[in-house]
Length: 331
Length: 266
Image (tube, rainbow over all chains, first blue to last red; front, side, top):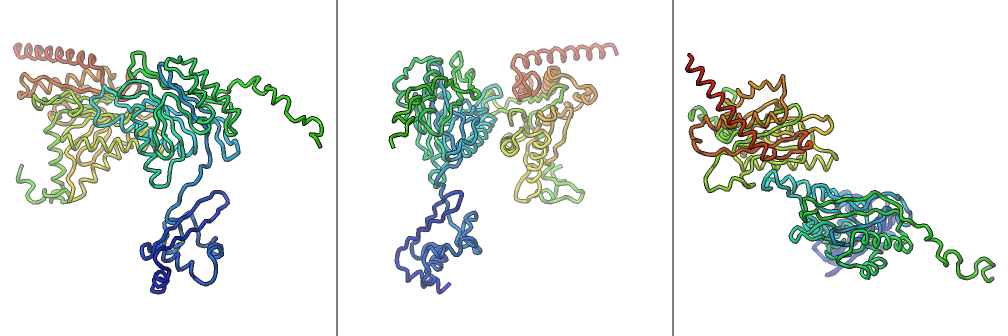
């Protein structure tokens, strides 16, 4: 211990040490920042780093299999080189864009049903839009699918607690959470996770009605906790490809049929241009009740269905590739 | 009665020489001084009824602050009596248990598990010197979605959670139990609609018998889990309750007249 302390003092006032270790299936970045005399665990690390002439890389190489067990943290006596904090740096199984649009009586959401595993199209029939039981909303997500499942779990639990709450006025009144309340709650969740450098890697879309105004509600929360409420939204690549189309075509008095046609058109364009999109999509509708109350509202998520892509591949440039490649291609 | 404790009643973690825990018994006394709760297990459901004694003219009795029957989950409900704040804690705990079960196992908590969990929780408070027992009894009814059966349980301040065909607790529970036994629920269960009427009648009878209640209106809260409510815990529709109360008053008047006639004849 005495020896270690002297090394620490000798090292000077402020030292920053970074190591990057690469593991076959995932990549994680470890960063330690050390200033003298303040971090107990880093004394071990310093001692290790400055031992002998061996370089930083060789040192970590030597102990890679034995000590640098990344699955155990925080550092303990038996594994002092375990990282004290891990940062998620990328999602693994992902979904692509979710689109949403407000029409005259409610909100329509669309998403494709493809689960990508990097560049592999892993599963082609998975729902990315979910109606939350005991809450009056539909939630959709793009990004990491396991985080979406965790969020749905969280929301269903929260919605059930609120519905059966001791504080409800009577057995005859429903106290289900509305879409705007769910949206606010998710903002809190996403922002807290972000502040711990461990975000839910999703862009979430919430659709339903606003509890205060009674109007249709469409909102978004991204993985760093930014909230946006708008008449039309798109996450992921949809933001680049579909949003300009939605912006051009949106009117406050769109009917459900027009909104659906617009969304399907955008999904087709996304299938053409987004490498991680598929032509099998799912729609979800959150509509106000006839009498305007949320009690009579409908929240439906459709089954996945295939877009009609007949004639899609007949565009001239698909049929006749440019560059006269039928011949020798020019050489 | 006050001196029978003498030294053995200071803490819930002390037995008396004759094998009683006085603090738990005193907690039961708190329950006996509060409004009556009746639960009936019918052939096609469970009905819970509570009579809410009018505390005070100034209390707004119709709002949630004085609610005695609560939803624990979609398929489970609980009526409580005794110290209402203690009862609220138990309701909150039951909600937590139900939600936890759903999150961990993916289906709705079965009635016997919920009753057992709540019984364990209540019992914990009878083991420690630093904690006092809950001064509330809970009658809970729930629907088991796998077995397709209903369950009626009561959790007492000592932590006992038994399954019942018919149960009564709170003020006037002896008289209520006698009336329930007359209904012969273990041999011939009635329907939920009839159960609502029986509960209305028993609670009205108890209300009338108590001379303190001269001129005070009777407030009833009745809820059910049955076919009519789609196996969900819901308040009995208010017109059904009103009809049941009218029927109950009629029945009680007839019985009084019959009694009077018998008295005259003899």
